[in-house]
Image (tube, rainbow, N blue to C red; front, side):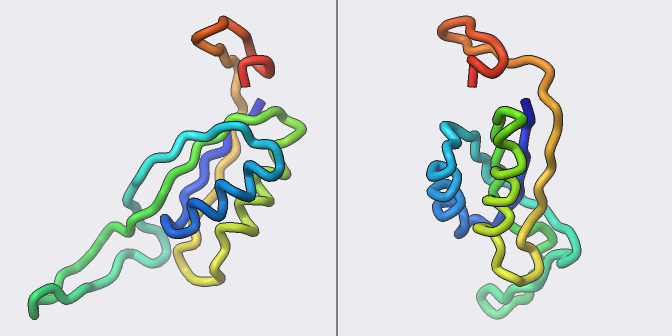
Length: 112
């Protein structure tokens, strides 16, 4: 099993969710986050004063899938979340040793 963590632009969330559902992803966790990378934030003007915005809003997706589905999930996120502008996000893939469904006690692939 693989844990796929993706940080994407918030306005792309629904489009990415629909694309993942279409390829068979049955669930994900979503968290609103802030971060910075190459873009290192920006400045905004509010009521005539300029403010530095050091962290940019993002959405973090966490998805656990079978090994067989992992590459397709990564590619689906990459294609769907892409805007060709700086700050499109990152995707990380980690191994998952063990999964348990709380309600039934099912393990690993059966727990997904």
